[in-house]
Length: 134
Image 1: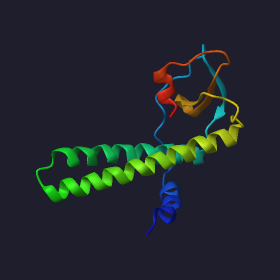
Image 2: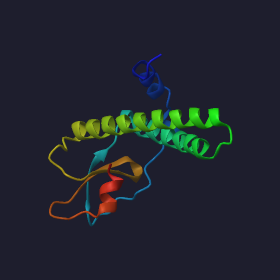
Image 3: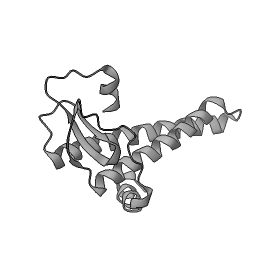
């Protein structure tokens, strides 16, 4: 079955008590809080985190397994999950920007407590901040 058919089922099956909350705190010096992420956004974020964890495990097997077939299968699965994570992140940020009308903001983020933020105007961001928001 294709991922397009499986994805809605995967998202619906994530309960609120299973959400993987972001770690970064709101920084009042730089962040403007515009609201809280919806349950749909929380589910997408959580699924991406789960796939990231699974992908890391497959990557280890792909690099270190002594079994050639297992190494090949794990490499294939790690690549598959990386692509799915990439798509989920795009869906996440597009939905977040739609939900909060943040299309005119350069630096949008998600913080602890599911706070949706954007960077105050005129403040430059570091490269690490940029990477966090990808």
